[in-house]
Image 1 (cartoon, rainbow, N blue to C red):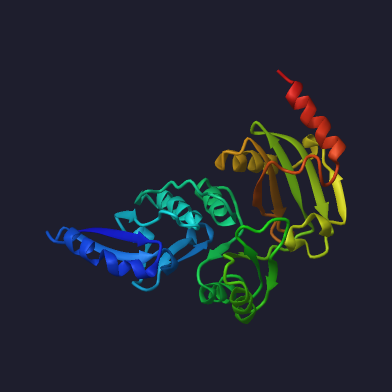
Image 2 (spheres, rainbow, N blue to C red):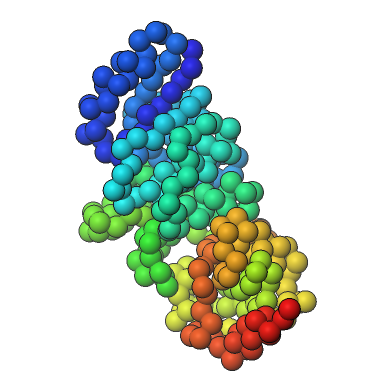
Length: 292
C-alpha cells in the first residue's frame, strides 16, 4: 500500500480535505495522512537530520509521495522549499517541491545540506521543539535567529528552553531557527563573482561574534586568496553554486575545537560600497568587470 501525505498551510484546513482523503483511499491502495506545515519539526544534523510529524509519529521520509496543497498566498513558502530539499535528499517524491519564495536562513541551510555542504546544526519548529533541541541536541547553548533577520538583528544567545519560550512569545510575528553555538576565534567572508573567489577577509576577536554583525568585529584582515585554506574557497564556490548566486558573500566559520568548517550564510549582493576594505573590494570588482 502506498503511503501519501497531504500538507496544508493551516491546521484548520485539514478538516476541509477529509472528503478528498476519503476519495483517495476508496479503493484501498493508498494510505493517506494529513498535516499542516506547523505540525512538522525539522532538525538538520548531518545524517541524523529529520522532518518529523510528531502528531502522527511519522517522518516525511516514511511516505512514498507528498502533495502540498493550499499554499496560495502563503508567506512561509520557504518552509515548503526546505521540505523539498529534505525529500529530494531522501528520494521521496514531493509535489510541488519548488516554490518561488526561497528567502531566509531556513531554506539556505537545507539547500546547502542537500548539496553536502557543511552547515551548523539547525532546528525549526515550535518553541517547545526548539527548547527540546537545545537540551538534547545543542548541549544547552545555541543561537536563536530570526529567519529573515539581517546584520545580526534579532539573534539571541540562549541557554535554556525558558529563554526560547520568552523570545518566541514576545515576537509572535517572527519565525525563528535555532543553531548550534560554534566556538571560534572568528570567521571568513569570501566574495565570489561568477562562481569564482575574488576576495577574502578574516574577522577575528569579536565581541558577541555569534551575532554575525560587522559592528562586533574588532580585527579585520584581508587574506590573499593564495593564503586562504583551499577547502574554504572550495566550500564558498560550492555554496554559491548551490543557491545559484553568481555574486555572493559567503560567511564561513571554523570550530576552533574540532577544526571543522561550516557555511553560515550566503549573502545576496554582498557589501561592496559599504563595510570594511571598500577600496580593495571595488578595485577587485573593477578588474572583474574589465576582464574578457
